[in-house]
Length: 150
Image (cartoon, rainbow, N blue to C red):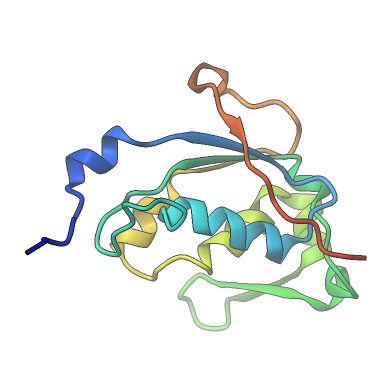
């Protein structure tokens, strides 16, 4: 009789890789889907829903990510301070000018579990607006993201 293999937390920490993704010209949703998939570890044969077995992902050129249609003007992000009447609304275009990395971070965050495991997986996401990043020592490998057919 065979037993089902279940990874331990120690094994998950040993097998973590680093990937780098160039977001220039990539569609935001397709990019975020692929990044969330790798952050969760679903690309590995040792995936377990209850453990953080995912890899680190570095996203560069986040300021040049592509939004389709009229999303620059018509997509809105909301935040609230908790005080009465303090709901803030910001369009995707304004957010790209003010804080371009936040577009990618919020898109990926929405695709991760809404619990402590998802928050831990989100810490493995490193997003940079330009081409420079400070993780060369980890020797990140390029991660392929499928381009949408135009």
